[in-house]
Amino acid sequence: MGNYSAANSEGWLPPWPQWWDDETLAGLIPGPAARRHFAASSPRLPVAMFEEVHPPAPQWPGAPAAYLQLGEAYQDEATKARELGWPMAERLSHHLAPLTDPALVAGSLRQLLGQLLAQQGHPGAEDMGAGPGEPH
Image (cartoon, rainbow, N blue to C red; front, top):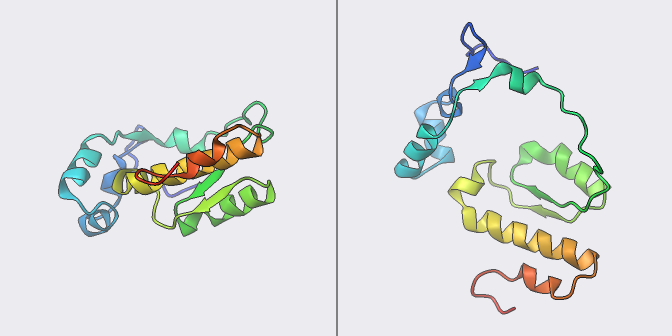
């Protein structure tokens, strides 16, 4: 269980950007406009959401899967993905990279999807790894 001391008496946490001081948040999201947009679109979250135990997803982990590691904090998950034989990409950034570096994340996901399709024998799967401006 995490430290939820910032929760109000009704069990709601402040929006995620308020968990950090301005300097830390600026380090994660350098652009002021992007930071303002992110802050404005971040909802309050109930503590109960973090304490809920989710049941396993049907067919998991038997369904095709891949793992994109965006930060060192996710090393345990990356290790598990490797153990399961999943295609794996390591792009050490932070978990806000979809906002701050969408091209990196999209290109990485495209490569992983190509690897998954190739494993299943789909024709043209190798073209999925080519990014914008790269030959297909």
